[in-house]
Amino acid sequence: MDDPARTLDVRLTVWPLVTDAENQVGLLATMLGLLQQDGTYQTLLTASPEEVAEVIAAALAATTR
Image (tube, rainbow, N blue to C red; front, side, top):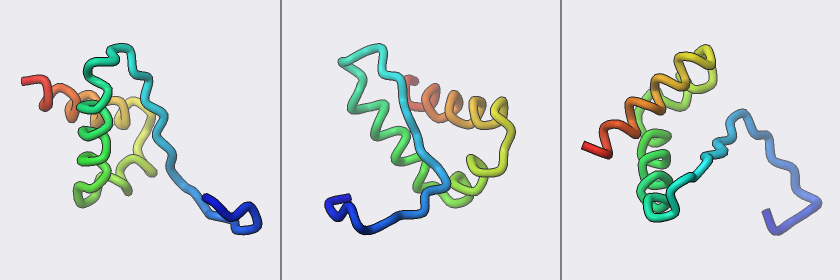
């Protein structure tokens, strides 16, 4: 990231919309944990938008219980 001459192939980016500043750290921690789970990365790459939304919603719901 600090070398403009270097390129990086990227297949997935995550752009969370944080609407509650008090929960920002928790949201980011949840998303990082989700991405570290076996198979989640591949699921996010190949799933439909609806399936991706379900995976993310389930992860976020699990952290608010």
